[in-house]
Length: 304
Image 1 (cartoon, helix red, strand yellow):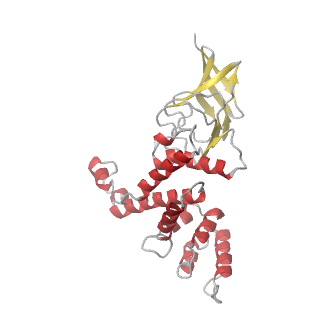
Image 2 (cartoon, one colour; image 1 turned 120 degrees about the horizontal axis):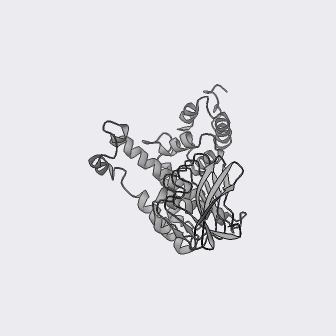
Image 3 (cartoon, one colour; image 1 turned 120 degrees about the vertical axis):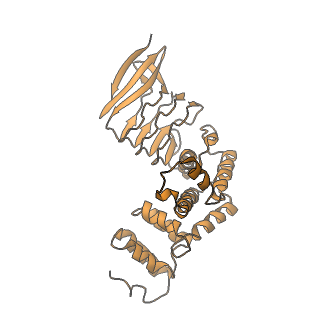
């Protein structure tokens, strides 16, 4: 006989069912930003996160799952718009469909046994999350093999497939299938291609910023792609992603500068784009430029 119950969290409630000698988490209600699922309830091991258990939660940003978890059912965390981090054991478990569907903020899936001081551990946590959010490659969602040489090679093969896909591919099918409202900007080919280039920029940035075991020739391909779309080029998606999506995150400006994307012929235009916004980032770019370029009147055109 199944028994249902509730377990209080700091600002909410975990709903569960006792099934034989195990517990399934069946739902969550509340306003916690971080939820830690216990390894046992009333002496019974928690082995399953049930179907739609956290579906559409608007508050939670981090979820920790215990070593005892053996199954995550369909859409368990789907549509959790702020969910950024999952901590769980990297071991074999049964995974349902769409468990992270439309979790647009998800950036890390962390091994609870991983060494947080090991850069490799951090890199793999980002690359594993990207399997679901950017690569659309469920076959790579493999906890046991994540981080192995073979897994990384397959990850990079899939990444390169996406990077080499023509920007216009899929546009005609989208129109024919009526996937977007008639007359919307998504029906504009130029806009569609810009979005595809932004997707490629995000993917290239991710891999270069988490470059564990990245082949040097692939690294060069990704760097060249990003430099082809910095400020001042025919299309500027590299700069737009940094400015629009990481406006006050210094890591991305540092990355752009180290890449070679801050140049004499685009620096002033970048400053104009920044305007009165992101003042700390603007100051950092000015300082970087003054140290790395010889033009004496670098600040002449700016009101500081």
